[in-house]
Image: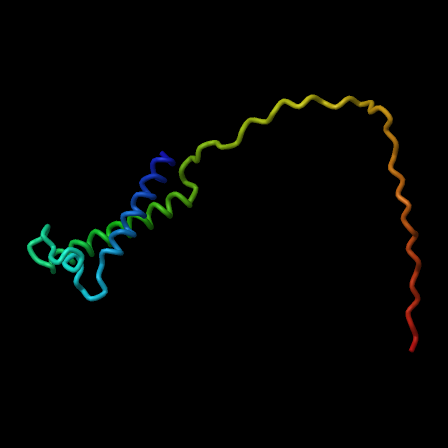
Length: 113
């Protein structure tokens, strides 16, 4: 279910980008794309249909974004099962402590002016 919604979300996003690019800033709409919108009876109805489809896809995209990012759906288990680890033996051969030759901190006296 989660993967299916992700695919639908991606397709809606691509369609939304294409529809937004079809909008003309000069209110030509689809009429400016091919000279005249031949799928519709007039340029105004083509622009109205383009606006309605764009708003529907925008609402669908935002809704799917909220659902997918909300964590309400069971995401697929991507974690691999832990590998079998052999327990370490209690005796480590040639184990020696590492000497740390750090200088002892010297007390600092405050400077008097």
